[in-house]
Amino acid sequence: MNQLITGHTRLAALFAKPAKHSISPAMHNLSFEDQKVDAVYLAFDVDPESLAASIQSIRQLDLLGVNLSMPHKMAAVPLVDELSPAAELIGAINTIVNHKGHLIGHNTDGIGFMRALGDIEVSIIGGTMTVIGAGGAATAIISQAALDGVETIHVFNRNDEFYPVIESKLQQIAAATTCNITLGDLDDQQALGLAIKESQLLVNATGVGMKPQEDASPLKDRGMLRESLAVYDVIYNPRETRLLRDAKAAGAKTANGLSMLLYQGAAAFELWTDKKMPIEKVKTLIE
Ligand code: NAD
Image 1 (cartoon, protein in one colour):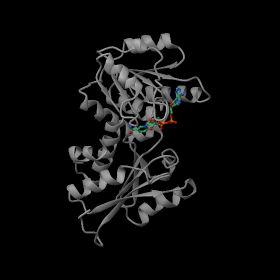
Image 2 (image 1 turned 30 degrees about the horizontal axis):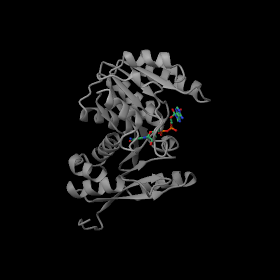
Image 3 (image 1 turned 120 degrees about the vertical axis):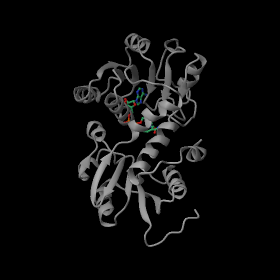
């Protein structure tokens, strides 16, 4: 870093546990320097019991803002002063912007996902998509897609103890938007096949296929894949999951979760600085 740190330099940070493995400091520090923003970004390991005090320090020390990651995305919601419409709907935040002590919570994961579709020239507004999974990443994706005008979203999740909670959350998102949202059991492969048939985009928002289970796919039958079905996998380790390999073999457009990671960061950077993240330069850091 060539930038000179002075008494005026502002701090942005990541609050997470663990935080030290994160790519966010590299992304944001490169962007601050490139865009001539007098700020630095550091990653802090924050325990759940220290979260409230850490968020209070944003006000006291006049931080630019923070990113939040596991396990703080939901716990931070009642600790800020205002929520963006998407954050309100999702019920979780990954970014806080400090407006002179007034903290606004945003969720840029879904924004990042929608922007990532542009990289593979997929337009899903007014269309139909199928999402496998209904956890944190999926909820952000579904909420933003519904807010942005996707017409129908078919969600499939394993029928575990969270299923009833997922059902009411999806009803809430559908009621707050104009989107039709259905929920199905991931074990019902026939229903999954029908949903995929009428979709233009399939999203894996589970960790199935992540290292070290690289041979696993959330899809039991790869015959459901086809050339005209774009496939997005939120996983980026490995860069190419079995699902993406199968989709590529079917001739489909594919992308991994790196672009969602990049653009959620870009959206946070823009919220803090009103400047654009230098995407092409930051891409070289993470690819
Ligand atoms: P989560 O724990 O909130 O949700 C996990 C989801 O996966 C749930 O719907 C769960 O039912 C489902 N699931 C887990 N194991 C399964 C299995 N064996 N079979 C079927 N379904 C299963 O987790 P999350 O925060 O939503 O993260 C999910 C994935 O998204 C992770 O791989 C994470 O690394 C990735 N992620 C990527 C980004 C990005 O920017 N690319 C952002 C957030 C999360």
